[in-house]
Length: 286
Image 1 (tube, one colour):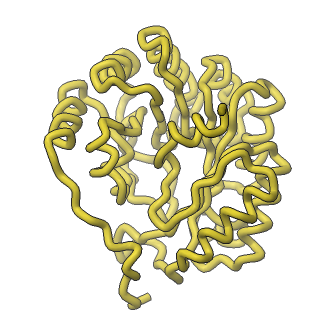
Image 2: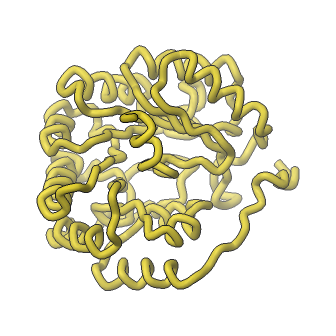
Image 3: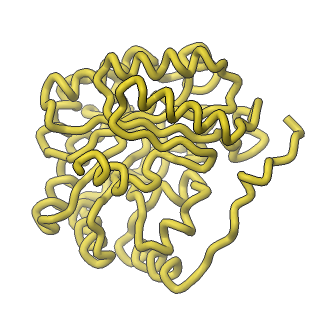
């Protein structure tokens, strides 16, 4: 696609003292953020608000998704200091809501679920008033691994379906659409007190009726929150942008999703999984 980005996708460069402070703190504690690894368009805005989505279990992924900018190399050893270091970073940043995500670690027996547990518990034990959201991989469908994460009592469990099922062979060749839906449904069956969340990218070549069918599938799985954002190809080697979705369509998708029963929906071109995550939780609890 050679079409120029529309005006609403032109990102204003934001800098400032807070950005440098957050970056220095991350380096000091030897921490990764998905904000930088995935080249998130909102990272400067979030850093400016002392906000970051921590990415655990290294920065090399075992999956081969064609939309993602995270590195596909041999995974690193698990950093056992990470749970405590993240807890300290949360305290230093003065965060009220923390988002924890990871690369997919199919090389680990539990997919990294035990490490998720340790990170969540460390944050909650050392930052009593903090709410914790986790964006987790599918753990290859392991119920035991999912239970491990649930037992840590995060406030929100997020797992993105990313795109419509027809595009999975091109976009998420090692993932299974039905497996992702099953994960979200299992969370509610095990602990209905935990909010569930998912997200979808648009502009990959999906059709409107396919997107609405995904909304229905997510609601059937009991999903509470939904994020919808424009896909932006990280490079020419990644899946191409097929279409830039108009702002009116994003507004329409939000209205339809709310009508279908989602508690909260964020739908705009630059929306990403953890963008304004704390605000989404607060609105739902009012």
